[in-house]
Amino acid sequence: MNVIEAIAAWSRAQTGFTQTARELARLAIVDTLACLYAGRRDFSTLAVRAAGEPYLRHGHRARVIGGGRAPAAIAALLNGTSAHAIDYDDNFGPGMSHASAVLVPALLAAADELNAGGGQLVDAYLIGLQAQAFIGAGVGPSHYTAGWHGTSTVGCIGTAAGVAWLMGLDQDGIARALSNAASFASGTKGQFGTPIKPLHAGWAARNAIDAAALARQGMRGRIDILEAPQGFGEMFGGGAPSGWDIPTILGTRLHVIEGVGVMPKRHPCCGSTHMIIDALSDLRVTHDFTDADVVSADTLVGIANQRNLAYAVPENEMQARFSMPYCVDTWLRNGALSVADFTLARVAQQTDPARLARVTMSAYRPEQEAGAPAGKKLPHRVTLTLRDGRRLEAERRLAKGSNAEPFSESERRQKFIDCCAELDEAAGLFDRLKHLEKADDLGYLDGLFAG
Image 1: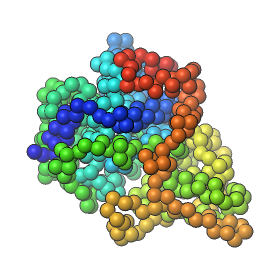
Image 2: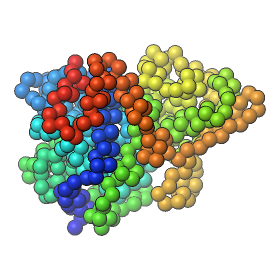
Image 3: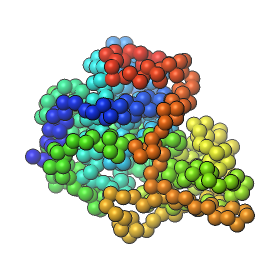
Image 4: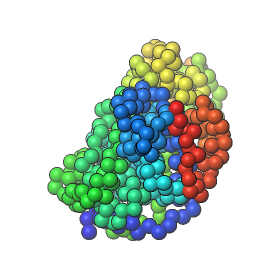
């Protein structure tokens, strides 16, 4: 049995997930819906909508953000772009991906065409998320360090398994979908900080739909394409891919969402800044200091994180989301980061090169990262030097939002309402989504997608 066959066998063998896993999946889906709505007016989303306008015709069933209906693949493309547009959607370490920004739009589009209910949506999400973890385990972490955007590579392939499962494909059909998706995987991190980056999630969602739809018609590639010569692992694995462990895949009982989980975002910017911002918040709790007190803020992050944050002095809102100096300086200035801080006007107002120069960023050396204990990441550290001579230091190994330090119900609710501030009855929708898996009809989401 090869890797794809093992993943397909695991996917089709699932007869029921724990209530804990299902609830964590529901929370991730709700968080992604909020991000999808908040990204509807971003340049990336509007550009994709304009390009896809010819497809927005009567007779289609899949909803698209901003109103209208389209073929499932086009709806997934547009909604996936919107879900990732403002970089507020969750991170998923095992997949090196923004997992839900691909999964939720793809699965919703398929569910619309199939008249699937909330329970099926939740189960398909769990299938696709675990498949992303399986794929990522074979090529991480060097896949990401080499410059591949896991959202559009690992995310595409893993999500195809969830879509194929939702479509009712058998084990061989899921395997065909995974093989097809391996030929669609693409997207480099060199595009971070540009409008094409959100499109990576949209393309991955669309490609997952197409991979499963083609598999339903019998289309297939090599079923061993992950580990084959010139296959995904060899071509995309980077310098030191981990390789796949088939017995572990087949023996998986505890779902990845119950262990590592997904990481919903506390801040609407690149996740590579989040441990630093949360460490600053920790310092603010225990020490008395203001923005005016800070002479310098020196940050230490991982190599891949430093490479993600390519903009010392951002010129627009997209670059600002990938700028450690802007994010740290804005947090020091305002005490928080909000969606409003990442508009073109606000970035122009708050970008002062002299202020940003007080924020430095360095990365661990390769040998330090290589020497980290297996499965452990080195902490991100921030050191503040204050005008009164004090030096305040803090570090974090995880950002807030992990299973180890989850958001409270009130924090989740507040994020949803902030993202959906212009949506009538946003609070009521949040409450209704508490019963997502019991809903046979998802028509009540029409208001969120309407123009």
